[in-house]
Image (cartoon, rainbow, N blue to C red):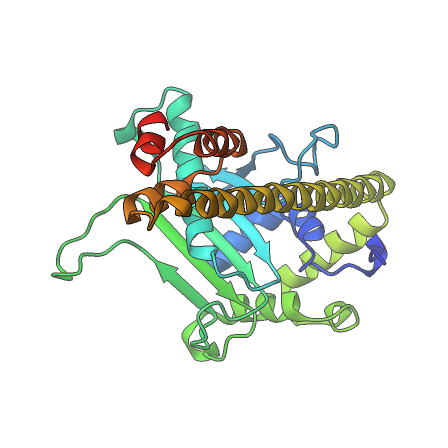
Length: 292
């Protein structure tokens, strides 16, 4: 059963995106996460369901830029996934490609940050914050200075003495369950975010957008199951056709490894059917290979 909007906490992707779509909330988050001083941020509303419910796709990451044109991509991660590193690489490349497509020269590419807010420890080292920049393996004196930074924030960190207390307070708020998240964390920014969460829950339009998101996700899951079944059937047909073709050809003797490799790598069922027809009419293995 789907969780209603009133029972969500900020760790829900929809709620996080809705809260961080407010520029002051996003600015406060970035200043605690990095930490840097930012005058203002501008949130990109393009292709975000929070702003465009007519957009037929689910995008709940937050994309922003500041007064220095530094770009930020922020996403909540509740479930641990093995591919977060490659996901961050994808987000970095997407930011660069969008800028280049708009006419930006590569030497003009701004600094960029990809930030994952994780309700789990992504690296198991007990750190509240993991920051990655490209470095040289041969010497620490060489710096690439490509302007890219990838950061993972961990709500289950254990090194509070090494990070700002304001960041720890916010991460504890994110980790909290529904009842705990309504308590006083003795932090002005957390209180500000709590007010935003309450406002969103009482906003009829936001409730409609959340319901639309649930429907879109349900449709995507159904389509994914359908595609999975079709793919499974197709793969089953290919495997069976390959095995039958090998059995037919073995009447000519042992099959060379190069031929076996070719047969096993072929995934087009129509080509396999054509090869089977050929195998049934030829008089030798050499003749079959020549007619493939």
